[in-house]
Image (cartoon, rainbow, N blue to C red; front, side, top):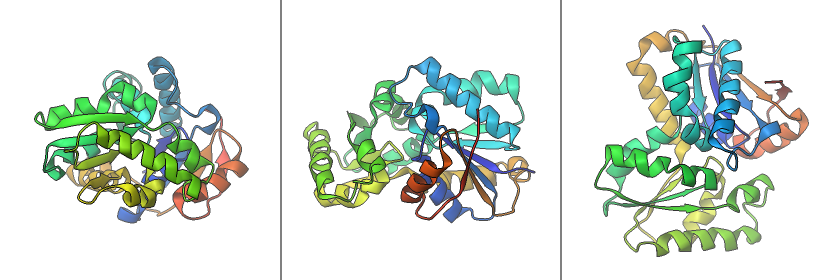
Length: 271
């Protein structure tokens, strides 16, 4: 029996892990941040796939039978290849899940107008993953996308609650809403963005639903484990959390507290 592995290129996946633990506190978790090679968003598909697969393999080697890619870029650019081509070859009895599908599965049930906005990094927007997945589940839903390149640095520099953040939050919200006056649902397609939620809601008109991925992924994982008792029975129930980074643990611990909401002690690992 082993832990659930949670992977991200950096810190953002900690917002997802936080919600997963709140929903499923009984399990053991290992978080791996590939901070030494972050950000992934401006890299090519092949590089992102190679890096993601290396980190997934590392989590498998640490005993994880199930790995969550708590990273939109990795989910957009590497998940499908790993599921379809790599797992049958390297670990047919293990599973890797992402953050995009759980979100897109419920978008269409929330929009009344049938028009949805996607806010994400340049890499995720360029992949077209959200429009493609939403079309699979809700062909009638119209999607609009916008990259928000300043939001991640605001969060990572701990400026997300500062007055300086207001300009960039309002700017991107105005831009996405200018694409259509009928958008009534916004998807935060980056795990950093929930930390800007207070300001996002401040500058949004009333009646617009904002979807943050953490709770959605947590509910989806709970449902997945109910539907797959053969996987659930392989998970350790020691309620422990361990944190690993490919970069400096001291820097990771300081930053992680912003995203995770409490202090962590990480260890350095070479992937």
